[in-house]
Length: 111
Image 1 (cartoon, helix red, strand yellow):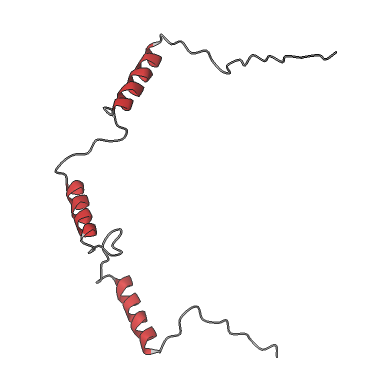
Image 2 (cartoon, rainbow, N blue to C red):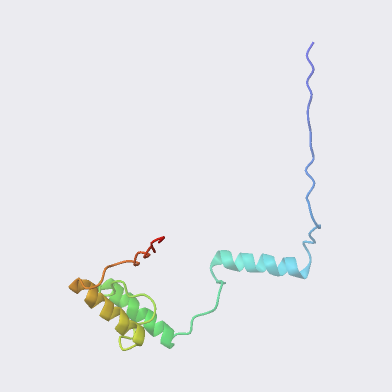
């Protein structure tokens, strides 16, 4: 004689019950339907003819011509104090007058 035990568990939905006829649920359903059709997009709309759009189009064109090699961010101001110092250090490093990296610590003798 064998026993067959059927285990039935009813899963209760957690959280607050959803009223399908509420205004919020109807607007969410409408937005989901429009999004599925491709009529509603997320984010800010683009402004055609803006300075940003023109810059992005120029960069895309340069990228397609392989002229935009490593140009990311804002352009470097070569006449700035920092860039002049970096150029001077690069010249010294190329001439062999400056060692690359951090200088070693000078140990004092224990006398």
